[in-house]
Length: 267
Length: 81
Ligand SMILES: [Zn+2]
Image 1 (cartoon, helix red, strand yellow):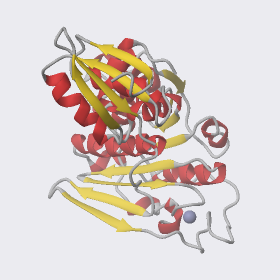
Image 2 (image 1 turned 180 degrees about the horizontal axis):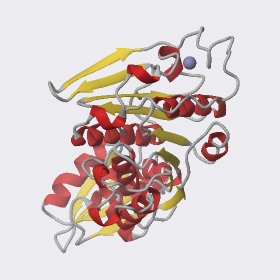
Image 3 (image 1 turned 30 degrees about the vertical axis):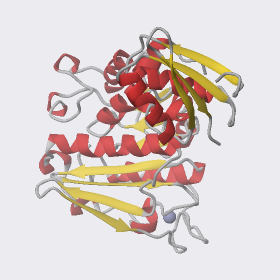
């Protein structure tokens, strides 16, 4: 690729990094990333990936912007209340970097449609707000062999892991089933410190960029969790389980199902 | 000096400040093959004090630095493998 003088200046702080360089920036430019959810995690991820020059960024969300979203979903502004989240996010991404091609998917991901949507991308960043969709994203990515970053936040806590299907532990290797609907607080009752959405979403964005650059160590076979109240970070080693119902040697999950959408964490 | 090393490409970075001079050097290096020699012309001051060191850290070999009549520097760099 031939960069213009303006693009070289825009990406100069990447290019001068030895681990990125011209070649790494070209890989970022050729990348196709799908962000699931334009909320607390998806917002910072979308802005940083656009700023980084990811060539094609898809963003999926079926919701419109609500006033209560603005405390943490930083791609959306006060003027956007009532507007489709994917269009609000697209406007900010393109404003940051007109080089980026944004593909908006205004829809809810379901067992019936998710595989078709994610198939068009090289990497998926999960910024969803509920366990059923997190399991759906995990299962669909493993079935389609698409690497992804899992992420979740609640109250003062965040957790994330990166999954390379067939090579590293998937979400189901550790968490077999979505928790029962009454075991977790509902969205409206749980609360979340807004800034931790940025902490986690930007970790996911950094993992995404590292995946394409191909340097460093990804958060594979590792669950990174933090508690912002005490500001403690913890890495829990995970292992791929041969007994995993999805990616184990005798899988029992061979097609996607929609779980009941009541249990939730805040996105 | 040019007699000693065959120069594959030359980049005039007079008037280009840090770090864009390094960015343009890296772009030029990406366009030549390992073992080939790139000449860069750098201003005196921060450019000549910084760019050769950064280039070495990236695994390339700085073959020579020579002061030119106008005060700028000609630096020859061999691309590392
Ligand atoms: Zn698994």
